Amino acid sequence: MGEFLTRAISVVAVVVCLNGYNTVLDKREQAEEQLRKQQAELEQEQSVDAAKEGTTTDGAYKDGTYTGEAQGFGGSIDVAVIIENGKISEINITSAEKEDGAYLSMAEDIIPSILEAQSAEVDTISGATFSSTGIKEAVAQALEEAANQED
Image (cartoon, rainbow, N blue to C red):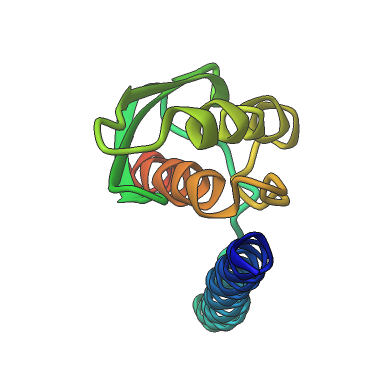
């Protein structure tokens, strides 16, 4: 009887743990979906604003080093974007102290995509959505500064 009771309690404990884990996953998925919706709305607003101003985001950037900051999974992500000959030549993460190392490592895979596209308008990295979004938004902020520089 005592062994049965121990096993029953163990099974109940496992079920409770799995239910709690699924709840956390559901909340994370909802947060990611909300973030995707907000990003889509922001991108739409930016494209409408650019159309109203008669500007595009495809212009050359002014050479120099520009910085950007955005929120990642665990905290602020700071980047330095180096522009040479009007193009993005290098992107460095200068600070991400509170960012989870595993997520940040995965999210860094977005940098080659940004360099290839010469734009921050690239897909986020699955499995590191918040961290890669932080890098992407920080780069976009730096590129906005580079595009707004006067000659």
